Length: 207
View 1 (cartoon, rainbow, N blue to C red):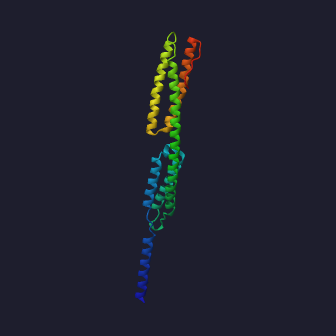
View 2 (cartoon, rainbow, N blue to C red):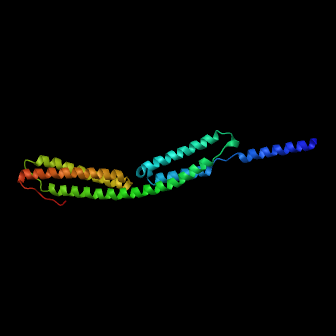
View 3 (cartoon, rainbow, N blue to C red):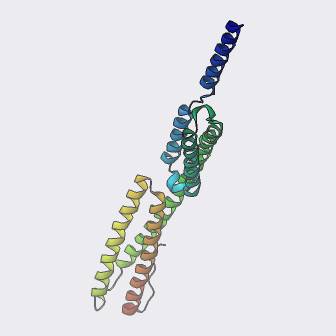
């Protein structure tokens, strides 16, 4: 009878040990790495600039998943559960893909817009340069020289726009190209006024 009791106790202890062993959930290291890789891929696709709000939300989701993992690490090992963290990390991988696609699409649209604005700015500056060739050389000469300097600055700005495009900063390129276009139009108007004051006629240039 005593042997049977000892046997039952031994079996019970073994069973408890098995429960403890199998009950210790393992942290989802692979899932965490996959989620980090997916977030990095979205960032590489330009999400920080071309899908900014979506990327911020993605980072917030990732932070919550990491918080959940940290929370489970503080729980007694036999009571840990990473099921919620698993689901959160899987969702992050899926969301990262969507954000990367959106960023790529927005980046391509921004590139098209930047190139179009650059072309418009180039046309305005070219038109102003054409007008400056007709500018007076008399009393208005000093003012015309100042305008020529402005045109030189605009050409330098156009080169900067091209550099931004080459670097892939299409948002910055569009903003700067728009500024060049507006300044170029203002310079062209100054030239027209200078010519009109001297000749009394309104000059024309290719627009």
